[in-house]
Image 1 (cartoon, rainbow, N blue to C red):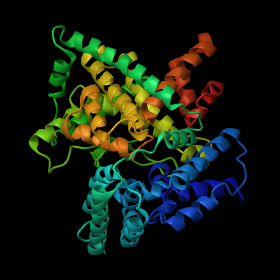
Image 2: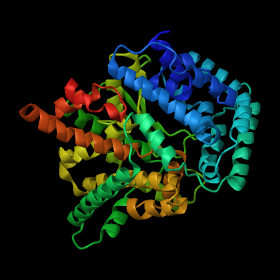
Image 3: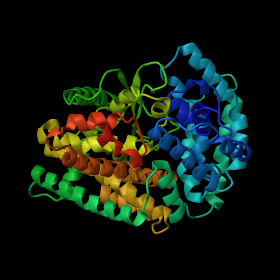
Image 4: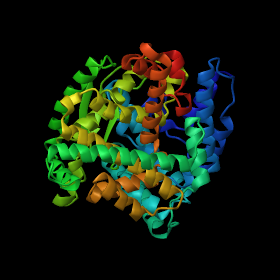
Length: 501
């Protein structure tokens, strides 16, 4: 059997990701079999094929296979993680213009018709959902119903199916296991397998603390430049109050996208293609903002930077708290991360990857680490001429990511409660109201969410090595070109950029 068969087996066990992130539209209109029997069959198929001729590709394939064996085999996450099933149902990806409207409509309808069967399997399979995970996933499951249109064939049965799923999660929220912790050994194995790298949670926690102290010092210094007499807390409150309304948010975002695209082009990073602005779909309420790029395995087309104006059912005060994340000084940091030189730039580079493995196996440690790394890179390279308000926004965003890293480790090793995580986001990252609650819910549902800060730190470590090893031959352009040329490798392969460069 060929390497392609091994790659296909990996994608068969991660269908939503294969379709939306890699752009493998042979999966359009298809759902993944997440039943116990379906997962067992899929796991049996892993590794059945030839070795990749490229040694780095072989490492990537093995990492993907091992990650699935641990995630779905040893840890049985399909029995505990509702978002795997929500993603399996999600229709939002068909809205993107990667094919004709007719083709996408047919695929979407085929997908929708399967909802009742998918939900039946999900209700049967999700027998280990903790109460915190059920509560955290509840809005996403409920939001699926908003994707159904009145003129869809089978709209009634589809909505009834979602009601069953929501009811199941409601019961789990009341009666499920009170702790969502994976446990330290399980978290270690999951992270190590995902990123093909040795993991020491104690060391990662220490690095998180050190990074928190570093970026908090940057925030304090920036706030003193803004108001020498005010406290950091008071200055941040003033900055966060300069926020758009929900109606103003798209226009603010479009203007900021043009600014960051122009700046990234001056750095010599990929920036061709079209980037449009839209809203986060209701099935993904935990996302503040997200990039859906023209995927590497599909024909080129528009990419979408989507922002979340908040839940219309919230009170006016809750909406204001949420929209403070898009404050005038903070929105450029989000755009740098999601658009350029972050995810949009990375997605353009991925389209040039030299092998199918590199184009379609996208590891989050690199993808999110790169997008977070470029935020402070922009500050270092003079974006907005060193405006202290922008510097404060960079530091505050870094505090959000490093707080997530600390809370993932604390909550999933059982040394931190969810309410303590909410408080950490309020105190350390200046989040308020539903923003802090959403951030803590995200930690519950995504134990690999440490990858933002973890990836950023390892990229910065590698940049220091490149400066030392390349000497006079070092330049940021050379380093970034070598890094993006890797595609989106597991963090354990980052060092090959020095060889490639």
